[in-house]
Image (cartoon, rainbow, N blue to C red; front, side):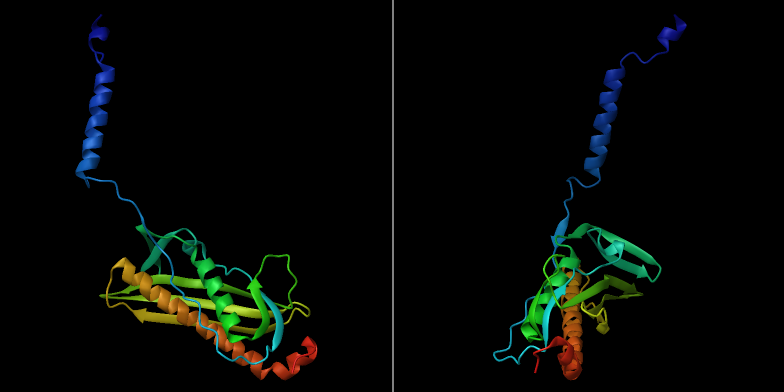
Length: 223
């Protein structure tokens, strides 16, 4: 009977007390549940020129850009050093940045009139050319007392008939942050991404225009 007396007489009551204490502790750590804030890259579609030259090339599909795994997980990224990645736990992308950047590429290419038609790659529709790319960086970078945003995009244009890569380029944008709130980080990331996309499309256009004579012979019907 000695062993019986040493047992806890009210196990259910003890469990209830422990649970109540845990809930009270959580409430004391903040008083309320935190919900994530969601953001989107703001890359407005460019306005097409009032007059456009005749397209230099035929149809082109733009495949969704790739990205490192750390840019595809949802939380907004920041770097405290070149070797250390961290994430804002309660600040996340509402739309995959790869999708936003890809759509911006399509809109910019359509506005410039380089191709007869530009559309998102779906693996089914026939096209003469294919644009692929990578969103390599899209994050805040902390350097001592200063903070910056860094965006880097790379892309290439391939002739699907020959397999030749006709153009490739990389665009990097780094901007110092004047304000360090996350919404300000997203605003600067949006601006840097917009500039990077415009640089890539401009680079592509310049190369196509310069090479239009030789490309026109393979394209057929282009003057």
